[in-house]
Image 1 (tube, helix red, strand yellow):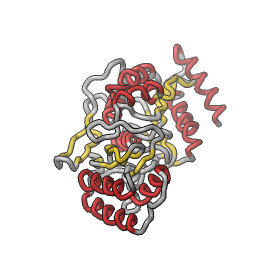
Image 2 (cartoon, helix red, strand yellow; image 1 turned 135 degrees about the horizontal axis):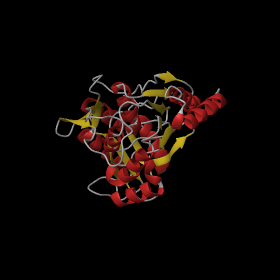
Image 3 (cartoon, helix red, strand yellow; image 1 turned 120 degrees about the vertical axis):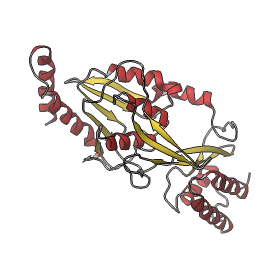
Image 4 (cartoon, one colour; image 1 turned 120 degrees about the horizontal axis):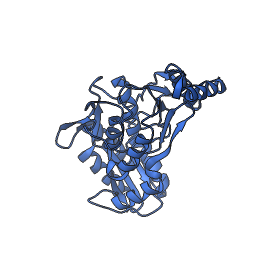
Length: 317
């Protein structure tokens, strides 16, 4: 397929699916003009993807708008470059997006995620991690390197942190002109962490999309404090469509609408409650968590926990 056919395919996807039809029209005109100027002539697939992505993001900076190059040939299922079974195998090899789930000294829970796979794929693993950490005195959720994923996984995770079903986000969809409310679940497997113990969310510029949803939603609910740096700024959920053997385009068909603010983090990122350098975020949140632990008592069964907390806090200082 030559560059003209590829650009026309991208333009069609924009016009049919992009959540902002006016921006789609501007992008279509721009891409065709760039094509006419020879901007894409002679480029290999990888360079072509980079050039088109830059142009796709030139109008409104939507980081979910991308033409992507893949080394392996792409499958095609109902027009999308998405193979559910391949995605499931990828999740298994990536420990379902969970990089770490452990008790830190001082009885502080720590959960690091890299991607939110859907509950149909990773629900059991995510539930196991949250159940493991349910009896810790404070919780740190590390999404500094989490590039996003399933809104349903975000709903599942937040469900472990609240008592009652809670409306935490809505997603407007261009297709059908509908707004779907996102609520936490009335029941989760295992034991909840609960609504009362403190939570900190670690963020950075690599925190994106679904991970920003988690950060922003918990922040706006008043359920957690965010610690670190401003996030990537991608709030428009997208679909991926095959363009050629090794190329697909991701096009957002919706946008997030937070029930508290009436807006989202698109283009501006989630602003941290406690701004610190990304590499200092864990120590900062951990120190705050340990200070909380030391308010819970230091006699009886709490004595060794308090001793751990004091020793660890001194080391962080």
